[in-house]
Amino acid sequence: MKQKLNIGLFGFGVVGQGLYDVLKTSPAFDSEISKICVKNKKERSLPESYFCYNPDEILNDPNINTVVELIDNADEAYRIVKKALQSGKHVVSANKKMLAENMAEMIQLQKENNVSLLYEASACGSIPVIRSLEEYYDNDLLLSVTGILNGSSNYILSKIFDHDQSYDTALKDAQKLGFAESDPTFDVEGYDSLYKLIILTLHSFGSIIKPDDVLTYGISNISDFDIQYAREKGYKIKLVGQVERLEGINITLFVLPRFVRKDKYIYSVEDEFNGVVIKGKAYDKQFMFGKGAGAHPTGSAVLSDITALAHNYAYEYKKMKYAEDFNYSKEHQVELYLRYSDASVLDKFNFESITEEYKGPEYSYKIGFIKLAELLEIKDQLRSLDIFMGITGKSLNY
Image (cartoon, rainbow, N blue to C red; front, top):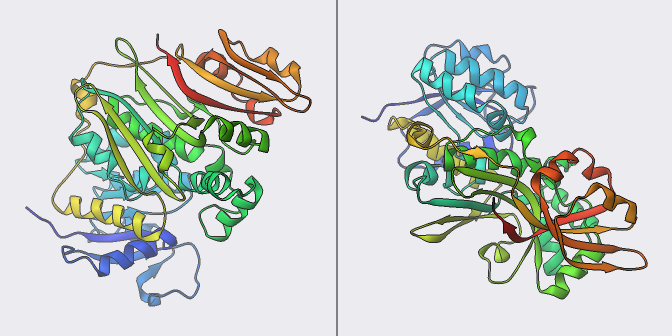
C-alpha cells in the first residue's frame, strides 16, 4: 500500500533545488517537504518559513517520517543519517563517500530499526544502476561491472580528445560550468569514482570492501605525451572503475585511467555523461548510459527513491544472504602503461613481464603486466611521482 511521506530535507544546494524542481512536475508524487535544514541564512527561492538551521528540528519531529540527505560533508551526513535511522525514519541519501565508508553499519541500522535507506543518486546520477543490479542481475551470472562513473573527469578528457584542449584549459572550463569544484581533487584523482564503485560492488557481488584497500589513480598527471601516444594508437583515455569476477569465488576492483578502443561502449561516452557496462555469462554485455551529474538528473534519481519509499521499497541485499562470500583478490595482473622521465622510478614497479618499451629524450614509457598488489604497496606515493599510468584493458586472472 502506498504511504504518504512527510519529508525533512537536508541541503538546498544544486541537487536539493533540483529535487524541489522535479517534485513540482511529478504527477505521481503524493508527499510533501515539511522542512529544509541548511547551514546559513541567505536569500533563497523559497519562503524563509521552509527553512531551519538546527538538524534536530527535523530529526526530533515525530511528524516527519522521511529524511532526504543532500549535503556535501560526509561526516555530518553520517551523523544525520544515523540518527534518522535510529529514530525510525526512512532515509534517501546521495552521499557516496559517507555510504562507502559506513556501509556495514548502515545496513545494520536498517535492520535494527525496520526502516529503509535508499541511495540510487549516489552512484551514477540519473542511471538506475543500483536497483538494476539489486533486482535483475544475479550473482552466478554476473561477471563484471565497468564504467565511467565521474562526469567531471570525463568532461575534461572529452575536451582533451575531442576538442584538442589542454588539461588545464579543460579543467578550468569544467569549473566554470560547475562540473568541477574549485578544488577538483575529489573528481580528478578518482575518489568520487572509488566511492561509487564500492557501492556498486556491494550490489553486484554482495561484498563490502574498504575504500582504502582499493587501488585508485586519477588523471591529474596526464601529459601531452600520453595524449599523443593514445591518439597514435587510436585510443581515448577514460577514467574507469571496474569490479570483476575472477576464477572461483574471487573478485577484484580498481579505479584507473584506461586506454579505450573505438569498439568499446565507453569510448563514445562524452562530456559529463556516465556509462556502465554490465557483463554476464548468459547475456554478454548490457550498457547503461545517462547524465551522471547536474541538478535535475540527480534530483530525478532522488525522486525515484522517494517514490519507491512511498511504495514500501527497501534494498534486500539478497546477494549478501545467498551468494558465496567472495574474496577480494589483489593478485590480479593488469597490463599497465607507465610513462616516466626519470628511469630511477622504475625501481618502484615490479613488472611481471614487458610488452612494449620506449625511451625518449624527455619521456619514456613501459607497458607490461603487473599485479595490483604491487601497485597497492606504493599507492600512497603514486600521485607525487612524475609519472602517468593507465591500463590497456588486457589482464591475467588468478
